[in-house]
Image (cartoon, rainbow, N blue to C red; front, top):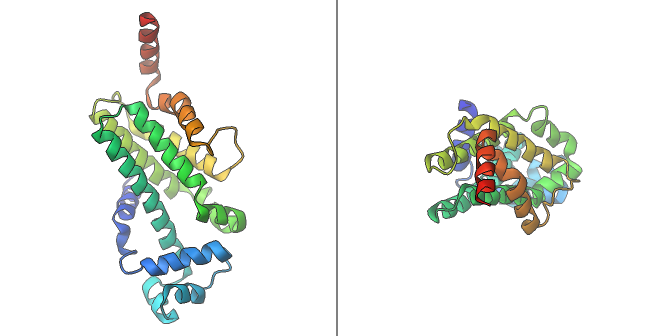
Length: 224
């Protein structure tokens, strides 16, 4: 867990990669969207980033490092959106269910509508898929650690019962990755209102142990 926690901290702290490189990363992203990763040359990235080719290589070392930097930048942006939403809900003293629903929608909608991910899955799948499947342990661990941190905050606030958050967090992270990679689904992820209803009915209950859910159902029936 330590390695992925470092990755989570690195992404949140920019890792030093973005400082002074915003124009380069924006240029690289635009090039990837136009041509895909395989067809984008370092010369094209340098041209769009306003650098000489030699300066680009001094900063990043090579094309894999540029791709990684753009990917981390995109992930950080999504994590920042999620963190901001969760902070607002926590400050409003929102319940666990509301926070879980909004977190699900933030990630589901954000990933499904991410233009770079769409482009890569459509044109660079052979290059990208190993990093999200057979070699995807860092991605799973990153999602797991973020969700475990989220669950722990809810537990500390008394909004979820005490349990080991890691298995639940990993289950949700793996499910989310599957939804991203295999687009056809009956789950209504392209309609935010429907996605919220789905999350409230089917995702939020999974964050509570079965015994706790049974107890809540019994209490609800006794009051009815």
